[in-house]
Every structure is written in structure tokens, then in C-alpha cells.
Length: 514
Ligand code: KIV
Ligand code: ZN
Image 1 (cartoon, protein in one colour):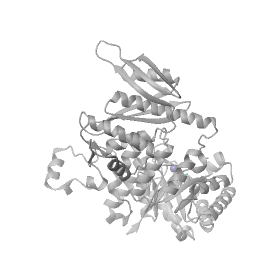
Image 2 (tube, rainbow, N blue to C red):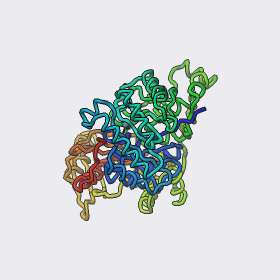
Image 3 (cartoon, rainbow, N blue to C red):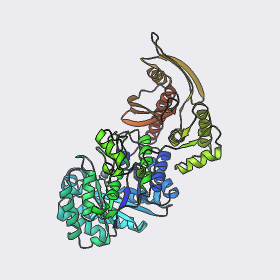
Image 4 (tube, helix red, strand yellow):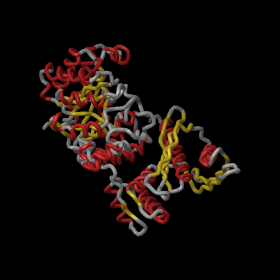
């Protein structure tokens, strides 16, 4: 049985999904969950791209144990040095560098000849190797590159010290049979290929990312790059949960498996969905709400007689359908902190105290507190650092025959201001009033409300996507009262936009990959 390495790039390629920007605390909590799940390599970001990415990589490298932590770096000296600076405090670290090899990219985008690109690739791998033993190289747009030239580049970077060569299908162009042939050809044509692991990185533009990755494994790939829920640039990347469960379920066919603790998959999926605001489609394989729901009478009949008739994966094996009551009114601070740690959160004292107070207030309204409730409370509190706008109070009124009205008190800087406004509904009234009070002009691109657990006393979690001057952020708010949750989510988005605006002013905005 071959062991396939899982390289998760949720925090880098996943973050390239429109609107999926994450703050440092959010990235660290996802990294902890990935490590708990047994991911071999976590690509924590692209250190040179922004101070936020640098800080996230540095913190994850220093604090998250059990996985190799990696930073992406373009084939540029400054990128490699910055990646190393961010990673240098970690135990097991990797630099992942890349340059395109397709004529289309070299001619129109990089404006380099094939020879120049090859030379640059060798130079940066050599430079990275001087810092760290674990170096990965990607020939970007490999699937649209000339095969002979691609093999030459791969041979040269392995000779320069790359221990992993990653073959990206950057634009999601290939198909399973063709990708099989390419990986097999690399295995045959590159003389020193045995000195490196072949990795694959597939995009899902034609819906083939998982199929292409599985095909590559059959052709000899030893590492798969993927993201939780398949998020990523454009149509996304190979979905971690799908590749892992395909291998686990069909070990007999693939003769390969991973070290992933599959019971942690659902938790990772929920966490990423909540933080990015990207909901999972109900019929999504493995982690969708309907993935284990059997509707047909014939299927239900078969299942009642024997699970094997229609169930190829046990829901428990991916952590689905499990909601545990964890805390209640009488739980203490210690139990609260311990449970949060078990869930992967390490809040600072201040965030912990605030979340604990909110948990106590919640327990007065709601008999049972579930893991999902705790996660909603703590992720909201941890996202609050650098808050410019804070909700002090909200009073809303609506009903048949009356104009929906919201009166809000906000703390802005060192002032508390109060205002009343109207709208089409109470959420609209609250949002219009907040926009006037904060003098902001963001556009509300998406508003979603979800009951976190069952029951009419469940907390409602509101996720909004806001856009201002081309910048998109995701805000969250949770409360048993959805109007309060809505106001919190909107303010959380506005606070992030304000923080991003500050960074842009200080010249710290994120640079693109090229
Ligand atoms: O899709 C791609 O080619 C990438 C590389 C940076 C590996 O994300
Ligand atoms: Zn990619």
C-alpha cells in the first residue's frame, strides 16, 4: 500500500477564492484543525505577498505541530528570503517556489525565454536549498507546456536540490487519461526523478480536479495538493475530503492511502465554510448536508436491512451527524477553555473571558450548548481585534402596518453615538443606520443566515460578504436573536474593511502571484 502525502493549500490557494480572505487568528485555527486531521504539509500562505500572510505563516510555523509548514514564493530572490524569514522559527518547514513553463505564460506574462526561465528556476531552488532542506518546485501551467522542455526543467531543479516536483494543472485544462500519460512520461523521461516526490496540483475548471489527481496517483504521483471543500482560485482545487475518501474507500483499487484522520473531516469543512463565508452545496460529496441522506423508499428499505446495500462510507467515519452537548449553565471557565482547546482554539485571555461571559448568557437562554455554538462564539470574539466599530445596543421594531425601525448605539473610537433609522425590514433598517453612523459605503454582496443547531432556541449565525473599492471581506455574527447577529456580522465586515483600508494606506496590500 503506497502512502500518498496530503499537501493542503486551503490557506494559500483556497484564500485566493474571491471573498475568502482570512485574518491571522482564523488562519491559525484552520491550521490547527489541519494538523489535528493529520495533513502532511500545510501551505500556510505566500509570505512575500502581505504582512498578514507573513505573520500567519510565522505563527503557524512556530505554534502548529505535527505537519510540515510551507510558504509559497515566486522565483525571485526577495520572495525566497521572505519565505525563509517567516518559516525559520519552525521545526519542519518547506519553501515552495514556482515559475511558469508554458510558452503562453513565458511569452505573454513573464516575457522570458525558455532558457531564462530554466535558469531562474535552478537559481531559486539553489537559493531556497541554502536555507532549508525541504524544497518544492512547481512548473506553473505544466499541462500546457512542451513535454520535453518540462522534463528538462524538472531534471534541472531536482539536480539543484528540489525534493518535491509539483505538476500543476493551473487552468484546469487536462483530463484523467491525458494527465496519467503526462505523469507516467515524467516518471520515465526524467533521469533523476527517483530523487524527488512527484506531486500534483489540479484546478477544477472542468470539474475534473479530483479525477485528474486520482489518475496521477495511479501513474506514480506521491503527493496531492488540495483544499478543504475544494475552495480555491476560480472553480477551486482538488477537494481534500474527496481525494482522501476515494483512496480510503477504494484502497483495493488504488493500492494507496493517506494518513488523514477522516473523523476530523466534517469539523474542518464546517470551520472553513464558516470562516470564508463560502457555504457547501447540499449535494457536495462527503461534506454536503445530503451526502448521507437517503430519500428513496427502495434505498431506505435496503439500508434498514443492511447498511452495505446503499452506503459506501459510514457517516461517522468523516465525523458527520455527530453533535455533542458539551456545556451548560453550570459549566465553569476551565471546562469552557478545555473544550475550546480540544476544538483547536487558543484564544488570548481577553477573548476567552468575553466568550465565556457570552456563553453564560447564552446558557440562560438555551438549555444545551453544542460544539458548534462554542465555535461560533469564539471565532466571533477572536475576529474582533482591531475593531473600530462596536455595537453597544440595538433596539428593533417591526410588524404588520408599521415601518421597520432600528435604533443603534455604536462605539466609534472614543465616542458612543446613537441613531434611529428605517428600512424595508429590520435588518435593512439596522444596516442602513449602521452605514450612516459609520459613514461607510460598502456594498452588501451576500447575506446568509443559518440556524447553528436544531430547535427554536438555536443560535442564528449570520455571514455577510461586503465589498468596498474592490476589496471583499466576510463578516460573521452569532446570537439567539438574528437581528443582533445580523448587526454583529455587518460590523465585523466593516471592521475588516477598515483594517484592510489601513493596510493599503501603509502600503501593505497583498501582491498577486506573478
Ligand atoms: O495553480 C497553480 O499553478 C498554483 C501554483 C502556484 C502551484 O497555484
Ligand atoms: Zn493553484
